[in-house]
Amino acid sequence: MNVWGEKIKLTIFGESHGKGIGVVIDGLPSGFELNLDRVAEQMKRRAPGRNKLSTARAEADEFQILSGFFNGKTTGTPLTAVIFNTDMRSKDYNPELLRPSHADFTALCKYGESRDYRGGGHFSGRITAPLVFAGAVAEQILEEKGIFTSAHIMQVGSVCDKPFDMINTDTELLKELSKMDFPVIDGECAEKMKEEIDKYRCDKNSIGGRVEVCICGVEAGIGSPFFGSVESRLSSMMFSIPAVKGIEFGLGFDFATADGKTANDEFYIEDDVVKTYTNNNAGINGGITNGMPIVFRLALKPTPSIANLQKTVNIDTKENTEIEIKGRHDPCIVHRAAIVAECATAIAMLDMVLDK
Image (cartoon, rainbow, N blue to C red; front, side, top):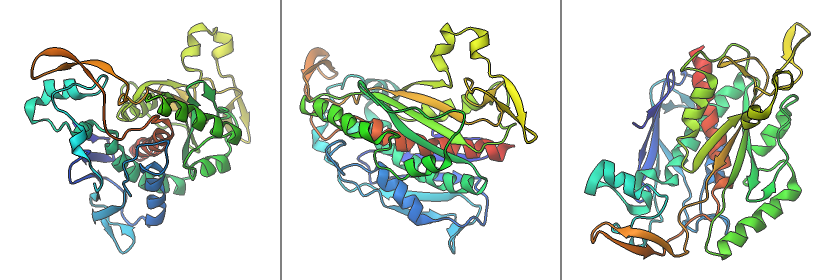
């Protein structure tokens, strides 16, 4: 299914090499004055073909709004946007050879010979562009409520950025990161990350990494047990981003080796507001926000399309063979995925805020 949400119903559509891709957002409040220039800026941050760190496919990712927007404001009816594909090169794709770690085989199993194999079809990272559009809209609505979302590249290969401060979140830092094409907290590590990516690109290989996301300004009491927990709904949205293979909140997997005294977030009150001295639980208890910043991290696998020779299967001849993937692909998806994660988080958070 390509429909997500409770109060906000989000539908994405299109294929990597089809005529276009797009999104329908149902449930937005009416009368919200939307800044389309800000939406375009977010789209540009994710757009491909801008440097050697990403695919050479050049797409401007300019959107056209078809419905739900009139006289500069949302109408309250479904907001529909389409992004037309302009730079496809379908001859690079062979339907007979299964690309390792791609959805070629599973798409064949589910959809049969009718599947669109060009550029991964509907399974392509290209389809995250509509998520960015929707998130750029959601971010503006959240900001009016004092809620800010942002993300940074926490790790590329062996190079790591500074983590977010999970206690005292700097809203200005979040705003600054939301404008960066290569969002990092420590500017000095950016060049090292880029060198790491370029090293794998030159070797006809790819590299994975981690993205860290922060949400601040969320009041206590958002979310619900059990299946509507904040972690459940955020995770559901995050795993819709291709290449995301893991997620952890707060202390995350380090909880496994922590003791209760160390892991617990002790309470105190300041100016009639209940806070915690630490934030190991990432601002969430029992699936409900406690007012502290929400911080989580995503693990992203390396781009599976690499030019190195790999073993595969020819599904026509039913023989084992080899493949050397052609085409234009990202040597690392992490820096572009950070922008997608930021916007996808805004969608999920808006859905939960409106649910309350």
